[in-house]
Length: 123
Image (cartoon, rainbow, N blue to C red; front, side, top):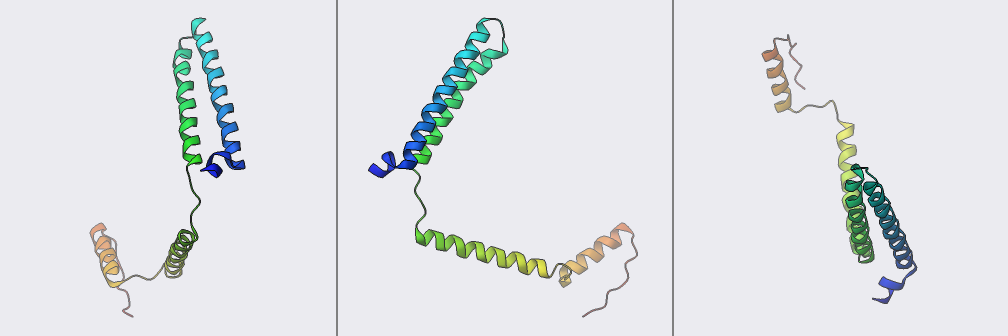
């Protein structure tokens, strides 16, 4: 609990939140002043800045309550990424190979389009 709220990372998040919300309040106040002077579009911006401040608070809350992945989760993620990488490399090695069903389908499409398709040698 203590490390969540008082760690160096948390301290930087708190400072960032304070600066963000203060900046949003200042920008909102500035837009309200412009709207009162006659700039109608500034009414929309005056509403938008508090929404940005709220989004900052939600992001701050999510970052404060996030936890680092465990070693088991990291190992599982690495195994999954390695498996995906191997599948991609295997698919990259055989881009010209067609299976029989794909060859038959491509020949059928060529016949429908009126192209002359030379018969392929069976291997």
